[in-house]
Amino acid sequence: MFAQYSFYRVVEKFPIQQIKRKKLRNAVNMDDVFYMLMNFEKEAWTPVTLDHDYFLIDGQHRIELAKQMGLEYIDVVIQLCKL
Image 1 (cartoon, rainbow, N blue to C red):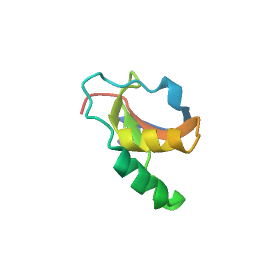
Image 2 (cartoon, rainbow, N blue to C red):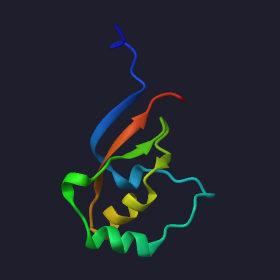
Image 3 (cartoon, rainbow, N blue to C red):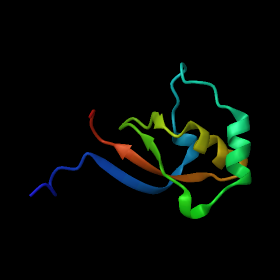
């Protein structure tokens, strides 16, 4: 019944360079990023959340972690409408 209504889309291997950030985001805490790097578990990785224009909603530390790891792509969930 609700299959026709999709509020989000999961994308694997989304280019990190295409992710946009708003200027007034909180600063990335590099201590948190370093902690995440030292305790990284692939199975615990949660996709970051983007809006329909690819602006980051949630996951700025995960984006920075991916960059520190040398990744060019990251899994994302794209929100297709305002909830």
